Length: 434
Image (tube, rainbow, N blue to C red):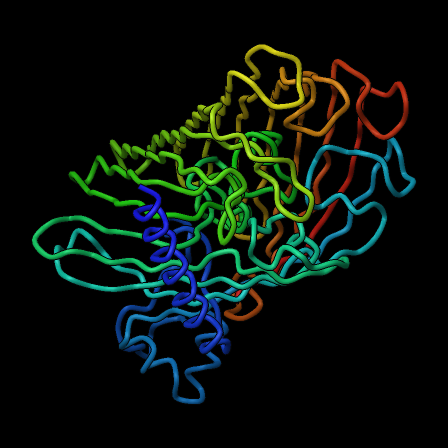
């Protein structure tokens, strides 16, 4: 059994290395996120009436876009920087529990993402090979490292290889096999896809992340899974991973089950259910982490529903629930955490899109999931507007500005000032996709 596991690990590491190599060799460009949220890929030779993204357009000027398109390769990315103000506790330091973009009263380079991909379509039922690599630089990289991969860096801005996988589509069957490292499949929000969100449009998103994304879902996963397209309405995924945020190293030397079902009854409605089952403690990375626990299985369930009401209004719902019989170092008894969030996005016109999120999150694990000193109920209300100043201009249309206001309340005193249960924050970011 150990030989089998070691053999599988070698295959996964080889897949990561192959995808990373493809990314580094092609570092003249980029690609992005999960398949569902990526910008349209140029799959044929560019024509005069096809509007290319800025990077591919630049490559076209030196004669590279057409050969890349002929090979089915797309290169793209984005840059994001923002500013955050905590009206409750303006001084630097102190917990805010809203994750990545919480460096108080300073301009931060959140991330620059550089990607390259070649997608495969299992519904074509032919042998094909693809890949995806994404390299990241910025303040956010320090929060998304997986165990064993570029996780020993220090400093405000860091590097990370956030995705590196190989895809194989098979002949005579609508099946795709993926091996390597990818952004986790669960959640209405995802790390890179926070630009696009589950609504699939960079204008329909918020700068800050939900509690569920931060504390009830993994950031990345490494392993292998198969995708089977039953029909246009149903798609199923099943496979294994090394655990939450594990890659080159595995904290507990155990594998997890990963499953996903996607139901698309119409072009306006999507329902996604994701389940992971396996030992996850510890799910962090770095030096001096505690001894892994391979005996207590975590059950993590995730549900996402999106509904497009019309061309202007889209609604969404995300729910997460995690439970485990025991966590080493905490009092005995089942530990659980999770929450529910509702989303709305309304496009006023090509320049302005209003975005909102209301959420509830509960940590019933003595603060284990959030890192707070106690378990608590968290409530959040976020409102923002995505502004596209130049929607009609090819290059300038890729610039987005997103101001946001957020109010958080907890039923215990957990925020930056002793005794405070309420938190009011303002933030804004600028985004350029290319």
